[in-house]
Image 1 (cartoon, one colour):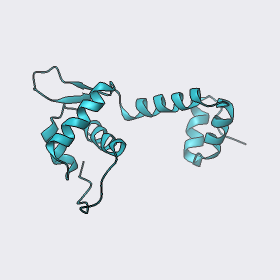
Image 2: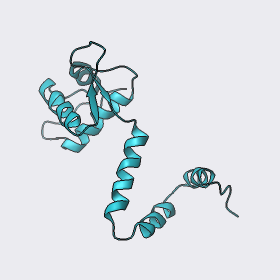
Image 3: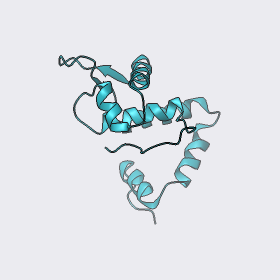
Length: 127
């Protein structure tokens, strides 16, 4: 995975954006990564910033410290699809009308996404 490129001196990424970038780096490989690995992959971040983001992700249960003996290496606890589905479920649980929210979600699907959803639900093609 390539880095995000240079940033201007005044441009800062939000904590959420940094967490997403770190998770993306971890999802892009099958091996555990150290903060130094992630720093090199993302670019433009101080080692301490990467370490702080990993600690936040660890505290949230989104990464684990690897147990294969590689000190300070991290792995994600969920893949991108699992995390996205979890976020979607939480959003539906919080809203006053989850059915209306699902209807709005489905309206915004691309034709390919709609077909995949219909296939998963056993409905096949639309008329």
